[in-house]
Length: 398
Ligand SMILES: *[C@@H]1O[C@H](CO)[C@@H](O)[C@H](O)[C@H]1NC(C)=O
Ligand SMILES: *[C@@H]1O[C@H](CO)[C@@H](O)[C@H](O)[C@H]1NC(C)=O
Figure (cartoon, helix red, strand yellow):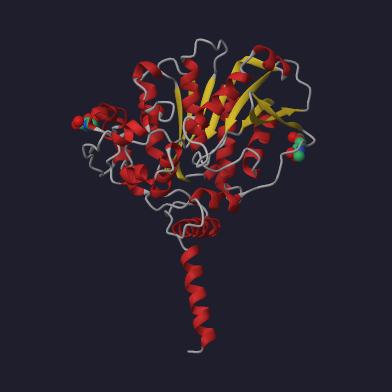
């Protein structure tokens, strides 16, 4: 074979490798998803390789590939303002049309594994704009400082400070918000932060104004058990693999890779914290149809050293699913969206069970043909369908 032919063959194999990703049969637009996933696959591999060569931190390389310079601007229907709530940068979306009564408000927290993502990115901008417009609501879309530069509890505290700032009577008045109709919402790591701040606020006696709802879109809720059926079934699923999720969790607490290694080999939790496994016990908390043939194995334990150094991963502000029943009681009406083909599916479903056991009213929207990040793929039909379902739930319940 000639040299050109060889070259063509090599390029062809690489292209096929990056484009072809096995996806479940019930995906509506499998080839389109593969096509959209290919650049992400390339970026992840490049980042892993560059980090291996010592050229930079994995997350920094991904961030530089994803960076958006766009800043949300006002349009004919919505006024967008960039401001700070207690030093935390936020965008505020206010509908332009006149309103007779004070409006509802959604405080939105973007996802990205506590490491990446930006409220200014096109998807979050669009979601906030549509929520403001279709709900006739004020939307606050917050940013927060990210890993690897900042670790827990910085992300949590930034979001909580901004939320508390917003929940002051004079601030709500300024934006024309009805203090009885405010909700928090977020997706993925943002869903984690939304659940965490809702829980913190419930027990914070210094804040008088409380939430009416919390909406959690495929949230990450616990870093103890990475072998739930959904983690096992979706180990290599596009967008979010098991290993990437574990990397995100460990980066939330530290850049020291020994925590990640311990998480991968199930040695991060010391025996003295073994009682926490009851709160993430999928054998008792998942309905049978999600457990299917999976067999629950008792947890394995490691030394106390890591949990002493990085106590964050046992903290309910990072892992709301680890909260005791008493702590969950009294949480506001909750919407949980889970996707069948998502490592985080069982985190969400276990939270649904635990909230209901604690007497919290929950709407569970389980998406059989969904994968992690489904709302944000604006080139796929599923995105519009799920955004519509989410916004109509808010319309009825907020
Ligand atoms: C503004 O609202 C109108 C009426 O709902 C809609 O047709 C139009 O597309 C909106 N404009 C933008 C920029 O979204
Ligand atoms: C998990 O639940 C199963 C079934 O209810 C039970 O047999 C097992 O002891 C539980 N394990 C832990 C660690 O909570």
